Image: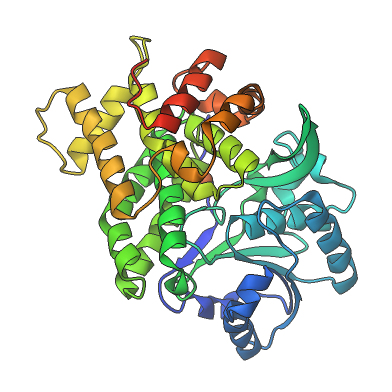
Length: 403
Ligand SMILES: [Fe+2]
């Protein structure tokens, strides 16, 4: 048995009018203050007003949200009693909206009850609907079944915001409204970072140990769209067609990796981002060429990474169909590096403002945090502590992975 789970997806310009068809009157909007200040919440509420809906707005979602965001918003929902919860924002907002949806509909549960073996969660949606509206084109969180919430905990002699991933298929939003009106205003650095998050989802989703034919189809298409449209939206953020296609690409990548998994690139990226406060997309995107090379160097003769990336290069027309498998696979690494440069992202950890001395001092902690990340187990090549240390060191210097 395997599976492919998806929300109902409405996409393209003016998708917000679909609210006309979503039954229920009272909407609880989960978002953040920046989006409210940018006028994005008003775009949504103007549309809700048109369809005779009411709303209450919760803007207290911070990046890498903490558990308190869920407990506070749950109390507000218990008093407001919405029919629809709307997550309007990026990954952090979606994480809170999904967690809130579950603990509001099942008030007896807390965050630790949101795990794959809790059968009640398959019934989510009977009391309140969850509608996810992404405002960035990257996380794919509007399609996925996990929610990442942080708790401040000690690690060695410092306090670290530790990310806890809660996952259940029932947490997939009921509707994803993928309207390009929201990302059209994204600044270029956010466009490139989030775009590389979508790319990392599709590249890792293609090779995770849970990959399957349905997820492969989604990941392949997403890689194609990112390479085709990310350089355009980076240079010309107002290009409506490219914005729409990147917005769709991120959702398609979400369906891809949500039904497969991300793996070691997200492990390293999450850890680096958590310790040094680097935005998620920039962090996972930076590691991408290194982990592709690392997986390609897998000494296990049954490993299929070279075949997968070789085929990817051929399917995207980057080389001839008769090109030798490893040669074709290496083109994928070159293409990722080229795209990083084109959209002006850092290509090595040294570029993220962290000193080598600081990284070396924290190395044991960095490795320990990697082993606490569930996505590490999804990698087609198992990494031990020595491999992880070398990956950090090679990525710091910008060296080709030769082990
Ligand atoms: Fe990601």
